[in-house]
Image (cartoon, rainbow, N blue to C red):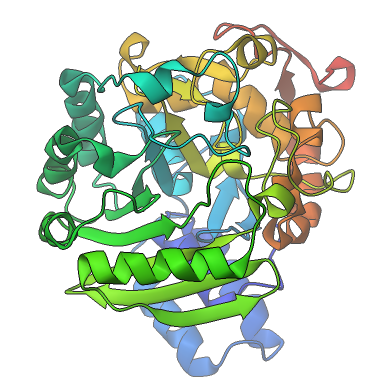
Length: 411
């Protein structure tokens, strides 16, 4: 397995224990103690935690290593990179890796920023009308997550504005009733935020609201306008903002309301954003060749229709580009559970290919999100994972895609 030097060793050992890789944790603890990396006291603590534990909670599978993530760090194993047929293994793969689920509970947005697909032809309906997610489908999702005591992030975000429609609170107020350990995040443009709905969100258990003070469509990024929007936000909500970060092309504030954290500001999305799968002329240069992306392993994105889209860097709709690129990964309605969806070949393809150094699909090659430092730090692990695979899913185009020997697989 690959230990990541950018992650504290003790936290990696703890992650191995928490996710059921007991012998691996024993071995790592012994080797790191021998080399003076952890203290005898830390080693003793790990041994106490491992008392009575079997060799592994996942017989037949093996650990690959610990990955560096944007939101959190994760143990990677053969559970995420091989075909699974047993439901208990599907649940283990999901619980071990998935730490963020992005859900679009409604579709409408009042803005059409030039660096967002909503500004493009074919997305006009998102500005003129709204559709909500089927509540029965949402409850199906919550029931699945309750079944594994999900404690990761739930992000209510898409190509929409959550606070534009009061009906979105019906979804929000169900989440922590069903899965109380989760962390709830909401992303907003701030236009509809009032003191009243901020307090309502806090009462519903929201942990973080991220507000982007987008400027008028087509207007060049400038700090004066961002500061003006911050001032108006404070005046409207009576929530004072404190400057947290300032540099060229980036202006951020933060504050707290009750137990809820609020981050606000704006980066220069024309320069620092991404191309949304090639449909927007924006963002940084594409990533260096051989840089893996772990988003398909850790993050699931659900559209209002219940469709799984590849990641947050492609539109949340069944666009021709998404279909052609295999970026539509099935609908939650069509699977017995979210765990079966995660184990599907459609999703397995992207885990095997996006988290790699040699077989990254063209859609991912053109994505600047892979420039993130966490992805660069995972290059060694990505190369190691590639060497462990017995087979590679041949195509993302069908959930029942055939598998082919690794030596003749193609991206």
